[in-house]
Image (cartoon, rainbow, N blue to C red; front, side):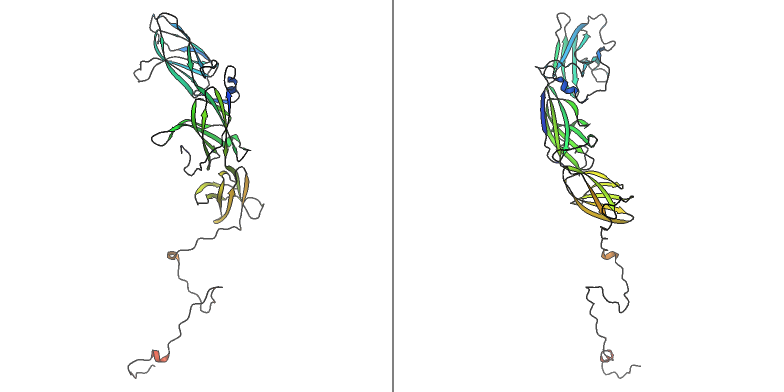
Length: 366
């Protein structure tokens, strides 16, 4: 499941979406939260022209460029990455980079000819072919990104808040490939982080903790809007303790195994106070301490964090010994049988006639 254990539990998500228009002046919605870009932070550049890319003596033309989220929105003023490529591949099979810029609208000086121009806004981007004429006016190039933003968060149960360090999201494309997998767009996205994406439907995988609390949802991103989605997890946080008496101190050097109702192991730990996030349902907690095993069944209710105490008196019975491992033991004569066990019938001793020789033999028994 794209890097998640096959034992992970999946389910349906309840997504609460708030769509915020991003018209002129409304792009500040992207600035209120952390943002994930497709490149590392760099100082704002007006333009970079690769040396030696313009033919000697060529007349360079000024080319202005701007990008919009939608055809009707205003130009994006920040967060853009511009790249201009030659359409002729180099010896390495790649298109040579002619010029680049970062920030908002860009201006390049390009020799007449054909180019490919790419502009990206986070994970959203668009590419178009550009022809720079030798003469005449060169109009402003307007690129429409057809992009929006996605901000993800999650709760446990109805409205129980989840710590951000316990949550992570992965964004996949909605289409399933021939191999049955989905294309990964972005992994390990933190909550309250704006991800800039092209408009479309995306498959979201939300992980709460690291055991089996996993929820999936398909979310629609609209161009020019910030989509906020809150996913509802059916899980809770559970802390385990092995104690000699109820409410007592946890006993150290204890190894834990958490089993589902079907007997599958979903988590293990060696700690006095292990804490795990588990999807709702029935489980068994098995504690091992000094060659002894203790066990308790418990139920996880969504949104209700709880402690589970395993008492040392709840010792798990030892498994029965199979026939191959049994040994014959001599029982002293006269030992009474265990309570509830009927004594085996005793055969009577043979009589003298039964032991005497048959057939009229007069030989005596000395």
